[in-house]
Length: 250
Ligand code: BTN
Image (cartoon, rainbow, N blue to C red; front, side, top):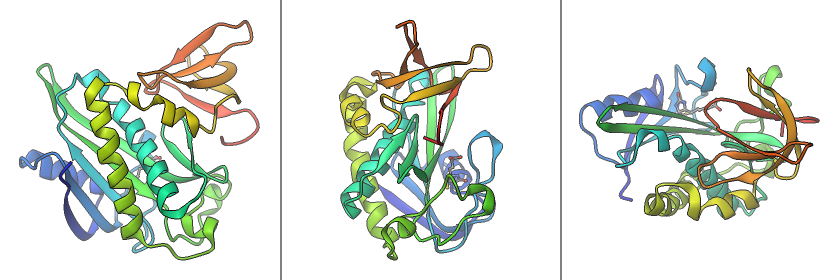
């Protein structure tokens, strides 16, 4: 994929920046990149703390010709790509907590927020926002047990540019594979190999029907296959529920 970087020192949120460019007709591959965000956003309406110069804040604009219901799988493609890119560049064991938290030493180093504009005729655009904790040296009290940075796990300052390039290279490769089948079929093996929840007891936080079981891996649609005690395997869809480890964040 041809990636065109649009950099600003400070923006409200790179997702908003990418969406503004999308509305003006920017092509697939446009990357909104910033050194700081004043209104960084996380999932479930949370804030994403975005101090200047420490982390990677970027949002990639895509215009795939796929059905809108397949779009959420692209979040998993990006999660896999961040994990592979970081593992490649730093030679670290990186894992994924389903669906798309990238974790090192059991703590989160990256968050992904995907947003889409679509109507009955299909997808106008998708923006995949990625925040990677690179050189942070500490986190607010409430995040200390769940978040870490690449500097904290390696004990050394890391080069944001090299890490970003590693992630974008991995994404270009994985996105191509995704488009071949319009699902994760070609990527499930790579994903499941580094799935932190794999074979772990998890609690599925489905508001209507919470249950516990053992996570066995994802299928080609990115659903997590959870084996209940009675042996039945339930496919859990990422958009609706989240899972927690019974004994830790993972
Ligand atoms: C999460 O809650 O885990 C997702 C966090 C996503 C943060 C990134 S930082 C770059 C992009 N811009 C935003 O406002 N959010 C995403």
